[in-house]
Length: 304
Ligand SMILES: Cc1ncc(COP(=O)(O)O)c(C=O)c1O
Image (cartoon, rainbow, N blue to C red; front, side, top):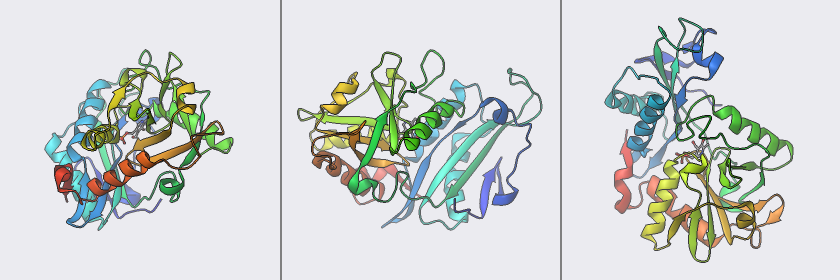
Protein backbone atom coordinates (compact mmCIF):
# COMPACT_ATOMS: atom_id res chain seq x y z
CA UNK A 1 0.00 0.00 0.00
CA UNK A 2 1.30 3.41 -0.91
CA UNK A 3 0.92 5.46 2.28
CA UNK A 4 -0.36 9.01 2.05
CA UNK A 5 0.56 11.78 4.48
CA UNK A 6 -2.67 12.19 6.44
CA UNK A 7 -5.74 10.26 7.58
CA UNK A 8 -8.89 12.07 8.71
CA UNK A 9 -9.68 10.71 12.16
CA UNK A 10 -12.66 11.91 14.20
CA UNK A 11 -12.59 15.36 12.64
CA UNK A 12 -8.81 15.92 12.69
CA UNK A 13 -6.08 15.40 10.11
CA UNK A 14 -3.59 13.00 11.67
CA UNK A 15 -0.29 11.84 10.14
CA UNK A 16 -0.80 8.39 8.56
CA UNK A 17 1.51 6.56 11.00
CA UNK A 18 -0.07 8.26 14.00
CA UNK A 19 -3.66 7.41 13.07
CA UNK A 20 -3.77 4.48 15.50
CA UNK A 21 -6.34 2.89 17.80
CA UNK A 22 -6.26 0.83 21.00
CA UNK A 23 -6.09 -2.96 20.71
CA UNK A 24 -9.21 -2.89 22.89
CA UNK A 25 -11.20 -1.30 20.05
CA UNK A 26 -14.61 -3.00 20.01
CA UNK A 27 -14.69 -3.38 16.22
CA UNK A 28 -11.32 -5.18 16.29
CA UNK A 29 -12.85 -7.83 18.56
CA UNK A 30 -16.33 -8.24 17.12
CA UNK A 31 -16.28 -6.79 13.59
CA UNK A 32 -18.86 -4.18 14.57
CA UNK A 33 -18.04 -1.49 12.02
CA UNK A 34 -19.12 -0.36 8.56
CA UNK A 35 -17.16 1.12 5.70
CA UNK A 36 -17.16 2.42 2.15
CA UNK A 37 -14.88 1.98 -0.83
CA UNK A 38 -14.76 4.98 -3.15
CA UNK A 39 -12.64 6.42 -5.93
CA UNK A 40 -11.41 9.85 -6.96
CA UNK A 41 -10.01 10.34 -10.46
CA UNK A 42 -7.84 12.77 -12.35
CA UNK A 43 -10.53 14.03 -14.73
CA UNK A 44 -10.21 16.69 -17.44
CA UNK A 45 -12.02 19.04 -15.06
CA UNK A 46 -9.66 18.28 -12.13
CA UNK A 47 -9.57 15.61 -9.43
CA UNK A 48 -13.14 14.46 -8.78
CA UNK A 49 -14.79 11.98 -6.44
CA UNK A 50 -17.20 9.64 -8.22
CA UNK A 51 -20.72 9.02 -6.88
CA UNK A 52 -19.98 10.94 -3.66
CA UNK A 53 -23.60 11.24 -2.49
CA UNK A 54 -24.39 7.58 -3.20
CA UNK A 55 -21.43 6.42 -1.12
CA UNK A 56 -22.13 8.77 1.76
CA UNK A 57 -25.80 7.74 1.77
CA UNK A 58 -24.84 4.05 1.82
CA UNK A 59 -22.35 4.66 4.66
CA UNK A 60 -25.16 6.15 6.79
CA UNK A 61 -27.57 3.34 5.82
CA UNK A 62 -24.94 0.74 6.75
CA UNK A 63 -24.22 2.50 10.05
CA UNK A 64 -27.89 2.65 10.92
CA UNK A 65 -28.35 -1.02 10.04
CA UNK A 66 -25.62 -1.99 12.49
CA UNK A 67 -26.57 0.49 15.23
CA UNK A 68 -23.69 2.94 14.86
CA UNK A 69 -24.65 6.57 15.26
CA UNK A 70 -22.18 8.59 13.20
CA UNK A 71 -21.25 11.65 15.28
CA UNK A 72 -20.95 13.90 12.20
CA UNK A 73 -23.53 14.96 9.66
CA UNK A 74 -23.39 13.94 6.00
CA UNK A 75 -22.04 17.32 4.98
CA UNK A 76 -19.05 17.02 7.29
CA UNK A 77 -18.29 13.52 6.02
CA UNK A 78 -18.62 14.54 2.36
CA UNK A 79 -16.27 17.48 2.92
CA UNK A 80 -13.83 15.28 4.82
CA UNK A 81 -13.76 12.83 1.90
CA UNK A 82 -12.87 15.63 -0.49
CA UNK A 83 -10.38 17.12 1.97
CA UNK A 84 -8.45 13.89 2.50
CA UNK A 85 -7.82 13.58 -1.23
CA UNK A 86 -6.80 17.23 -1.45
CA UNK A 87 -4.44 17.42 1.54
CA UNK A 88 -2.64 14.31 0.38
CA UNK A 89 -2.12 15.87 -3.05
CA UNK A 90 -3.66 12.83 -4.70
CA UNK A 91 -4.70 13.19 -8.32
CA UNK A 92 -6.53 9.87 -8.19
CA UNK A 93 -7.25 7.76 -5.14
CA UNK A 94 -9.10 4.93 -3.50
CA UNK A 95 -10.93 6.30 -0.47
CA UNK A 96 -11.85 4.25 2.58
CA UNK A 97 -14.23 5.75 5.14
CA UNK A 98 -14.55 3.47 8.20
CA UNK A 99 -17.04 3.89 11.04
CA UNK A 100 -16.24 1.84 14.12
CA UNK A 101 -16.87 1.40 17.82
CA UNK A 102 -13.77 2.54 19.72
CA UNK A 103 -12.71 1.33 23.15
CA UNK A 104 -14.40 1.76 26.48
CA UNK A 105 -16.28 -1.44 27.27
CA UNK A 106 -16.07 -5.03 26.09
CA UNK A 107 -19.03 -7.34 25.51
CA UNK A 108 -21.46 -7.81 22.68
CA UNK A 109 -23.76 -4.97 23.66
CA UNK A 110 -21.89 -1.90 22.44
CA UNK A 111 -22.67 0.68 25.11
CA UNK A 112 -20.60 3.53 26.51
CA UNK A 113 -18.34 3.21 23.52
CA UNK A 114 -17.59 6.14 21.22
CA UNK A 115 -18.43 5.79 17.53
CA UNK A 116 -15.32 6.83 15.62
CA UNK A 117 -14.73 7.71 11.98
CA UNK A 118 -11.55 7.34 9.95
CA UNK A 119 -11.18 8.32 6.29
CA UNK A 120 -8.05 7.27 4.43
CA UNK A 121 -7.14 7.85 0.78
CA UNK A 122 -4.24 6.46 -1.18
CA UNK A 123 -3.16 5.62 -4.70
CA UNK A 124 -4.55 2.26 -5.73
CA UNK A 125 -4.76 0.90 -9.26
CA UNK A 126 -6.94 -1.82 -10.77
CA UNK A 127 -8.07 -4.22 -8.00
CA UNK A 128 -7.97 -7.33 -10.19
CA UNK A 129 -4.73 -6.34 -11.93
CA UNK A 130 -3.79 -4.03 -14.78
CA UNK A 131 -4.67 -6.63 -17.43
CA UNK A 132 -8.11 -7.45 -16.03
CA UNK A 133 -9.87 -4.79 -18.11
CA UNK A 134 -8.54 -6.12 -21.42
CA UNK A 135 -8.09 -9.83 -20.70
CA UNK A 136 -10.86 -10.48 -18.18
CA UNK A 137 -10.63 -12.74 -15.15
CA UNK A 138 -10.97 -16.45 -14.48
CA UNK A 139 -13.17 -17.31 -11.52
CA UNK A 140 -14.55 -20.28 -9.62
CA UNK A 141 -17.85 -20.84 -7.90
CA UNK A 142 -16.98 -20.74 -4.24
CA UNK A 143 -17.85 -23.49 -1.77
CA UNK A 144 -18.44 -20.61 0.64
CA UNK A 145 -21.98 -19.30 0.51
CA UNK A 146 -22.55 -15.52 0.53
CA UNK A 147 -23.66 -14.20 3.95
CA UNK A 148 -27.35 -14.84 4.38
CA UNK A 149 -29.95 -12.13 5.00
CA UNK A 150 -31.01 -14.44 7.85
CA UNK A 151 -27.66 -13.97 9.59
CA UNK A 152 -26.43 -10.54 8.48
CA UNK A 153 -27.68 -7.43 6.73
CA UNK A 154 -25.87 -8.01 3.43
CA UNK A 155 -27.17 -4.72 1.97
CA UNK A 156 -24.91 -2.94 4.49
CA UNK A 157 -21.11 -2.89 4.16
CA UNK A 158 -20.45 -4.35 7.57
CA UNK A 159 -16.85 -5.09 8.59
CA UNK A 160 -17.64 -8.54 10.08
CA UNK A 161 -19.40 -9.71 6.91
CA UNK A 162 -16.14 -9.42 5.00
CA UNK A 163 -14.70 -12.48 6.79
CA UNK A 164 -17.04 -14.37 4.44
CA UNK A 165 -15.69 -12.54 1.38
CA UNK A 166 -12.07 -13.15 2.40
CA UNK A 167 -12.71 -16.89 2.83
CA UNK A 168 -14.00 -17.05 -0.73
CA UNK A 169 -11.22 -14.87 -2.14
CA UNK A 170 -8.40 -16.78 -0.40
CA UNK A 171 -9.77 -20.15 -1.52
CA UNK A 172 -10.15 -18.95 -5.11
CA UNK A 173 -6.61 -17.58 -5.27
CA UNK A 174 -5.19 -20.76 -3.67
CA UNK A 175 -6.79 -22.75 -6.49
CA UNK A 176 -5.26 -20.45 -9.12
CA UNK A 177 -8.39 -18.39 -9.91
CA UNK A 178 -8.57 -14.61 -9.85
CA UNK A 179 -11.73 -14.44 -7.80
CA UNK A 180 -14.89 -16.27 -6.76
CA UNK A 181 -18.61 -16.20 -7.40
CA UNK A 182 -20.69 -16.83 -4.31
CA UNK A 183 -24.13 -18.44 -4.17
CA UNK A 184 -27.11 -17.49 -2.04
CA UNK A 185 -29.09 -19.48 0.56
CA UNK A 186 -31.10 -20.93 -2.35
CA UNK A 187 -28.11 -21.95 -4.43
CA UNK A 188 -28.65 -19.13 -6.93
CA UNK A 189 -25.86 -16.74 -7.90
CA UNK A 190 -25.43 -13.84 -5.46
CA UNK A 191 -22.26 -11.97 -6.45
CA UNK A 192 -18.46 -12.01 -6.48
CA UNK A 193 -16.37 -11.84 -3.30
CA UNK A 194 -16.28 -8.05 -3.63
CA UNK A 195 -18.21 -7.36 -6.85
CA UNK A 196 -21.69 -7.56 -8.28
CA UNK A 197 -22.25 -9.73 -11.33
CA UNK A 198 -24.11 -9.38 -14.63
CA UNK A 199 -24.60 -11.83 -17.48
CA UNK A 200 -25.51 -10.98 -21.06
CA UNK A 201 -27.75 -13.47 -22.82
CA UNK A 202 -30.41 -13.16 -25.56
CA UNK A 203 -29.68 -9.46 -26.01
CA UNK A 204 -30.39 -8.57 -22.40
CA UNK A 205 -28.48 -8.09 -19.19
CA UNK A 206 -29.45 -10.18 -16.19
CA UNK A 207 -28.31 -9.63 -12.63
CA UNK A 208 -29.28 -11.30 -9.33
CA UNK A 209 -31.70 -9.36 -7.14
CA UNK A 210 -30.40 -7.84 -3.88
CA UNK A 211 -32.57 -10.34 -1.96
CA UNK A 212 -29.93 -12.98 -2.79
CA UNK A 213 -27.68 -11.21 -0.27
CA UNK A 214 -25.74 -9.25 -2.90
CA UNK A 215 -24.58 -5.77 -1.90
CA UNK A 216 -26.56 -2.96 -3.55
CA UNK A 217 -23.53 -1.88 -5.54
CA UNK A 218 -23.20 1.68 -6.75
CA UNK A 219 -21.43 0.46 -9.90
CA UNK A 220 -24.28 -2.05 -10.38
CA UNK A 221 -26.75 0.83 -10.28
CA UNK A 222 -24.61 2.81 -12.75
CA UNK A 223 -24.43 -0.15 -15.14
CA UNK A 224 -28.23 -0.32 -15.10
CA UNK A 225 -28.34 3.36 -16.08
CA UNK A 226 -25.74 2.90 -18.80
CA UNK A 227 -27.67 -0.09 -20.19
CA UNK A 228 -30.83 2.01 -20.27
CA UNK A 229 -28.91 4.78 -22.05
CA UNK A 230 -27.69 2.39 -24.76
CA UNK A 231 -31.01 0.52 -25.04
CA UNK A 232 -30.05 -2.79 -23.50
CA UNK A 233 -32.81 -4.20 -21.28
CA UNK A 234 -31.76 -5.18 -17.73
CA UNK A 235 -33.68 -7.75 -15.72
CA UNK A 236 -33.09 -8.59 -12.05
CA UNK A 237 -33.68 -12.30 -11.75
CA UNK A 238 -32.31 -15.40 -10.05
CA UNK A 239 -29.48 -17.05 -11.97
CA UNK A 240 -28.19 -20.58 -11.58
CA UNK A 241 -24.55 -21.65 -11.98
CA UNK A 242 -25.67 -23.28 -15.28
CA UNK A 243 -26.98 -19.88 -16.49
CA UNK A 244 -23.48 -18.51 -16.02
CA UNK A 245 -21.85 -21.15 -18.19
CA UNK A 246 -24.52 -20.77 -20.88
CA UNK A 247 -24.27 -16.98 -21.02
CA UNK A 248 -22.79 -14.99 -23.90
CA UNK A 249 -20.88 -12.69 -21.57
CA UNK A 250 -20.33 -12.21 -17.86
CA UNK A 251 -18.87 -9.23 -16.06
CA UNK A 252 -18.14 -8.08 -12.52
CA UNK A 253 -18.85 -4.56 -11.29
CA UNK A 254 -17.45 -2.68 -8.31
CA UNK A 255 -15.70 0.50 -7.32
CA UNK A 256 -12.35 -1.20 -6.80
CA UNK A 257 -12.85 -3.72 -9.63
CA UNK A 258 -14.51 -1.24 -12.04
CA UNK A 259 -16.06 -3.32 -14.86
CA UNK A 260 -14.20 -6.47 -15.70
CA UNK A 261 -15.15 -9.36 -17.99
CA UNK A 262 -15.33 -12.86 -16.50
CA UNK A 263 -13.94 -15.10 -19.21
CA UNK A 264 -14.21 -18.48 -17.48
CA UNK A 265 -16.11 -20.04 -14.60
CA UNK A 266 -14.67 -23.18 -12.99
CA UNK A 267 -12.42 -23.45 -16.07
CA UNK A 268 -15.42 -23.44 -18.47
CA UNK A 269 -14.84 -20.77 -21.11
CA UNK A 270 -17.60 -18.19 -21.50
CA UNK A 271 -18.25 -17.93 -25.26
CA UNK A 272 -14.79 -17.82 -26.86
CA UNK A 273 -13.03 -17.01 -23.60
CA UNK A 274 -12.35 -13.36 -24.32
CA UNK A 275 -13.94 -10.19 -22.99
CA UNK A 276 -17.30 -9.68 -24.72
CA UNK A 277 -18.40 -6.72 -26.86
CA UNK A 278 -21.18 -5.60 -24.54
CA UNK A 279 -18.88 -5.80 -21.54
CA UNK A 280 -16.31 -3.64 -23.34
CA UNK A 281 -18.95 -1.13 -24.42
CA UNK A 282 -20.31 -0.76 -20.88
CA UNK A 283 -16.82 -0.60 -19.40
CA UNK A 284 -15.83 2.20 -21.82
CA UNK A 285 -18.96 4.20 -21.07
CA UNK A 286 -18.42 3.74 -17.31
CA UNK A 287 -14.82 4.95 -17.60
CA UNK A 288 -15.96 7.95 -19.67
CA UNK A 289 -18.52 8.85 -17.00
CA UNK A 290 -16.21 8.55 -13.98
CA UNK A 291 -13.47 10.40 -15.85
CA UNK A 292 -15.87 13.30 -16.49
CA UNK A 293 -15.95 12.83 -20.26
CA UNK A 294 -19.72 12.50 -20.69
CA UNK A 295 -21.70 15.61 -19.84
CA UNK A 296 -24.94 13.61 -19.68
CA UNK A 297 -23.63 12.11 -16.46
CA UNK A 298 -21.63 15.03 -15.10
CA UNK A 299 -23.63 15.14 -11.83
CA UNK A 300 -22.02 11.87 -10.78
CA UNK A 301 -18.62 13.39 -10.21
CA UNK A 302 -17.73 16.02 -7.61
CA UNK A 303 -14.65 18.22 -7.96
CA UNK A 304 -12.62 18.23 -4.77
C1 LIG B 1 -19.37 -7.73 -1.47
C2 LIG B 1 -19.41 -6.61 -2.47
N1 LIG B 1 -20.30 -6.67 -3.47
C3 LIG B 1 -20.37 -5.71 -4.40
C4 LIG B 1 -19.52 -4.62 -4.37
C5 LIG B 1 -19.62 -3.55 -5.41
O1 LIG B 1 -20.18 -2.38 -4.85
P1 LIG B 1 -19.84 -0.96 -5.41
O2 LIG B 1 -20.16 -0.97 -6.84
O3 LIG B 1 -20.73 -0.03 -4.65
O4 LIG B 1 -18.39 -0.71 -5.15
C6 LIG B 1 -18.57 -4.53 -3.35
C7 LIG B 1 -17.65 -3.42 -3.32
O5 LIG B 1 -17.59 -2.70 -2.40
C8 LIG B 1 -18.52 -5.55 -2.37
O6 LIG B 1 -17.63 -5.50 -1.39
